[in-house]
Length: 362
Figure (cartoon, helix red, strand yellow):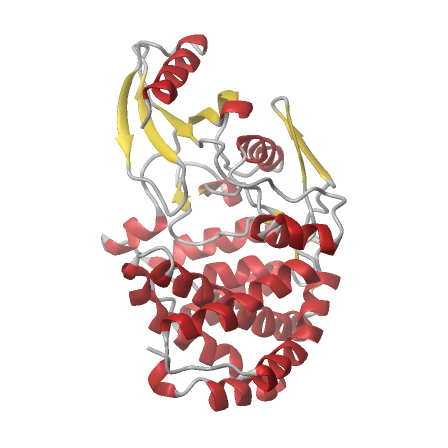
């Protein structure tokens, strides 16, 4: 890390009254963000987020599809490009809904720095690896989603001096998600070739699903809602028992999207029984929801989400030289089979059966 960046960080901490805090590096994630745990002399701990502003620009709210294509992947997918003001504004809005996003102690969004409440180390994934019972954790995660899905979110999130537009997960972004699969999987599985006819059929099969996803974009969507980004806070009550992380790319989306992120978790097995129990719990807490329609959308948008992640992991392995992501892909193929078992998706299942042989789904 450059000395200029370190100087900037030290000055920011001094201005926040934390210049004397002991700093302990924490493991990062797949992004350019870095985290440290701060130990102020007054006691307790805080989290220091460092997100250098090095990515391309986020999607302008009024950008046309043509402008988004010219702007690149972040604009097409409506990603926040690592912007700290997106995290700050979303965190404040989530807390106002009674959910456990980190409190913001200080931030300098222009330089990509923030000091956050420390929600602890009890990530769902680590607790389950250590032998914790799954169901209470997933029950809490479903309760938090139901809380979110009962609220109509605003077009603009505003909190702690930060404003960020909550854009729709629209057909352009959904198509961008689906196209990752046909673009990147053949670069990983070099025996695969998706010709013009196969890609035209792919697009035709997904087009009505993109339309359904866009039409149903009505709730705050965390967008990365899974066991590596959820922290168990059993001392809190109800939906607040679930600490939320990594939500800066939030959009307004179909309710099925975060359900898929939770129950089609690329990094850990979610059994068919656990998936079914979680969906039963969701619908028990949302008795007014149209279960048949939402289940159909969960399968179709879930298949899209899984295909998107397969494409992203193929890109990480082939372009970014991160081979560890290949180990997650067999699990995703199993989730995809569950979704494609829905009779309404028989034409899509037939496409996969014709163009992606079973020995390529490893």
